[in-house]
Image (cartoon, rainbow, N blue to C red; front, side, top):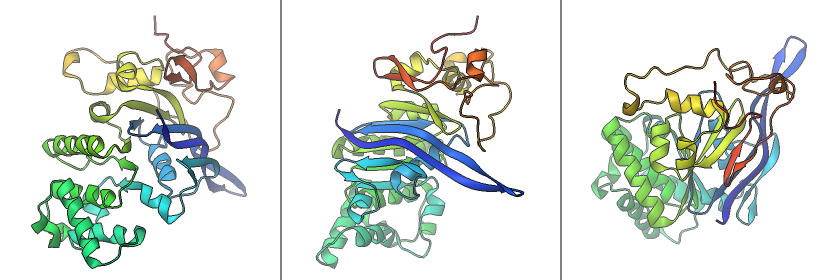
Length: 318
């Protein structure tokens, strides 16, 4: 598959003052990420693992502290042309739409900023075509966000991203603020748009069930680093990292009703100046050994198209 986005060695560090010394919060710490053309990559992990920061780095909304991002033949995402090629659908449609803009203007605003159209007629045609693509009646175009339902606002957010013909759409928890029935409708719409337009998605979520329904591949993050990456079916059926197994075990599953699930003990370490020589999962891992406290495991091939960062990849508790 042809890569669309390649991120290498991405880091995002935030300086923190502690008295007279300076520390750094390692939000993203040396991440490699490749998204192929037409592929949907699900990015999962618990709150604070760095997945939203990584999404914003890929979108060009924040600058990396180190590392590089390549978009096809473009390096860096600060040019207007590159910004049009990567669009974001934000988490909460109630908060991400300008309340003083009509639905039409919410979509038209990005078109005006990123595309050079010849006249108002071309602008209107493009915006209304985006409405058609997401299944929004054109008569809603003049309504304001407070006059729309949650599902309609979510569609406006998707239309805003689609209107500039992006190659990659970053979806940051796009259904978490919606009712379950609306979530299913929006996920179906996203799947149809991906097939119709041959777009790529980076789908950020903490909900493995949602990610399973839409993603071709899943990338798991923990404390700023990628710890496992594999095709969706492979990762869910045969997770190799103990943290991934814990995530899957903790997700709701009717098939496990009545089965006691073993939960992880403790909480994640602080992301402030973590020791680079210690596995980030040490202290919570049921398979931990002395090696885990002496050497941080690199992300290495475990099976074909399956990467894991664990000294004891694939092992389970006795």
